[in-house]
Length: 337
Ligand code: PHE
Image (cartoon, rainbow, N blue to C red):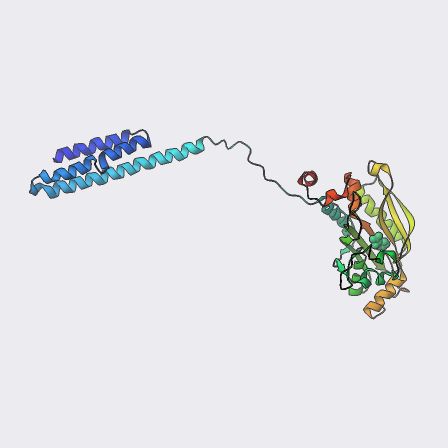
């Protein structure tokens, strides 16, 4: 019986080692270790063994069972490892991966950032104010009379409490001067709102960039020089500029600055911004609001300007419809990444 068991073990190990697939291995396992397998049969035949030999042979049989179990597990682990290897064998790591979609700044934000950079180089600081404003900051302090058409309910979004959505970023001029004494040199990019019907060239919310410079002896020449420098930096040295007399309640004299650029807006002049010398009445309103004479118009002068960024973006990027700027269409936006 002892020699039989040793032979049995040897041939079982040989079969385990010879199994070529997990399925073959499994049938070998069933043959030896299964419920009705050879090991079970050997256990049963122990009954026929003389009593004195049983402990020794029983112990040996148990060792054979453990050895075979371990051998099966080893072999199964080898198969599993081979399977894992062959699963990644076919992967070609030199193939390009699935591209990640990289986002980019909105074209208007890009344009705004470029404009801000030019003014920062000239020493302008960034200022900001809220979109919801008082009538005083939006109109009264800006020397706009109560009967001015811009104050009409059909032009301006009023809230129930009498406040409004600012119709221009010029409100930040007032906020800046109320907050600090002169000199002042700020720009304020931001949203403005008007009750326009939306169409290809109008939105009820649009984007402006405001500028304010208050110091001693500021002249129209400073305004013109600064704006011409800005326009050249932003649009290139081929750009032409012209200043036309205009009217704004809060500047005197007032101008509009037009630009002309080959290949843009069909080579026609386009209106870029409104500007002018800050009206002394505005400085007096600010003094009233501050309760001091920090902005004495006999001492301080200055200029202000405000430009619309959406129309400029339309012209520069050749957009047929302003609504492209707010529709968030990936096919449009991806062209500016
Ligand atoms: N606030 C004016 C507008 O919205 C632009 C402007 C700003 C004009 C500053 C003069 C000075 O049209």
